Image (cartoon, rainbow, N blue to C red; front, side, top):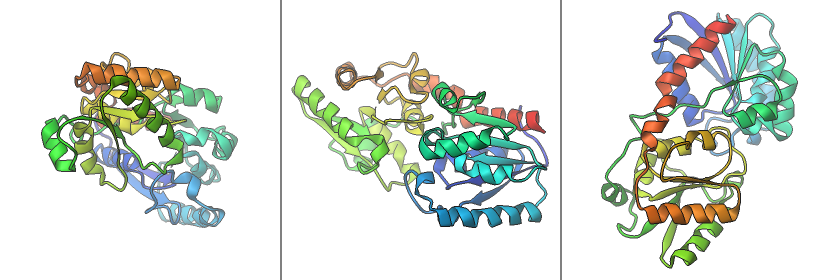
Length: 315
């Protein structure tokens, strides 16, 4: 599609996640005039942003959104994460696009999302799993991947950069162990069992508080990415690993099965034993994957074009 001119969009969001900022950057490069309105207090918090906002912050968000709507002239509202939907649908002048991230289709957040979804002109979800949980029609649109930032780098160079042992096998769990929804205890058990069966040391590495631009070095320093989440939408870490040709062993969450279709070596497990077997198989293969070729179809440039098509469909 390329670019558009003079399209003005108000984005409502719970927090400035990296993938959200990349979405905004992509849309602006394509000619969209984007204004971002963030839930108060959310800008500097890591992790599962939406679930950590309190009632006070969400009450403060309503007048902030109303002021912005009075101040600016917009063509549509793009609500990002289900808890921003109530603020988008309380006006009746502009069309509303709602983008769901993953955890906003379950639990309390899911109840809010489903109560508001009927008033939105278009909805996007990250995976078929999310669409089923939402229980209504929606466009499947994963978040994109920056192929310029995430790229293959010589493994020895990457290990020297991050300070890991140059020898041995390194499995990357790309989150803080305290991030409960990512299920670090399961990753620990899987690596310990694989280590025992292989009869060799396997180092489980974690990262937190690392600048996003530095994550590429950890991806290239590792031999395998381990994802053990209980629930995901379209996990960016899997796509980032694929862009670096890093093999992935993951639970069957979100769109991971679709993303890893045809990618080798990589494995999906629906049980702890399957994860252990998959990790052993990938470690024994001792190869980088063909993930970069597979992940090109969800580059930010292509995802940006699909968002523009969606905008034009509701205007």
